[in-house]
Length: 267
Ligand SMILES: O=C(O)CCC(=O)C(=O)O
Image (tube, rainbow, N blue to C red):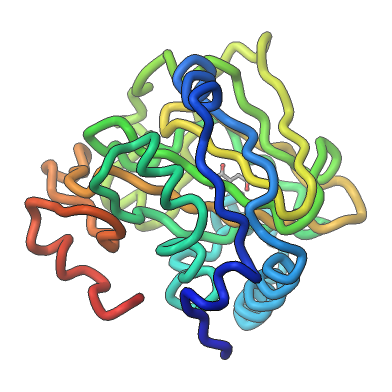
């Protein structure tokens, strides 16, 4: 597998900071459509590495399983050097510092693939519901590896929906059920819900409280997304006796030695 370093970043990634207007809009609406952060070359390589890992799993769509089991490949940064570079050193890191603060850790990296034929919908949920983190500043950063629209199962969100705060799903989620990838589902008033179609290589950032869902992929196209999440480096798992969430310290510092040590060998 290829190795990546600071020298290759400019060929692969498009670095840019959020404007004051975008920061305001994130706080008001809970999301920002952030455009291209991958060059054509970066996008082609990322698809290649992601696909290689996905195919390694030999997964077939299984109607009897949840969307989580059909769509997710977690900790993809441990398998793809390019995704790791993008997660730890790519354009989202500066953006996360602007939105979350100076001390940052990476708390999720996963492929969420709805290849053609994967007709499972992902019900409304908050990412901070699939594991409540405190402080409540974690963000989700999505990169589309394919063009995605309603037919192929693009995401839906509710502008301003993050203002609902943490929706209690403690009856649905425990440490054990999280590990077993049990689905969480919340009832939402969909009046103001909007789909977020994306072009390949484009990105979307939203607050951990943003309710989102996706329908099944009923098109004859694949819909491949990369999900990365960043949180305050001191964020703790409320559902797990407030133990620190383990995630690679990416910027700044943390009071938790176990976070400092976590994935310290990965760069
Ligand atoms: O990929 C999807 O359609 C949904 C994924 C998602 O919402 C998530 O991983 O939080």
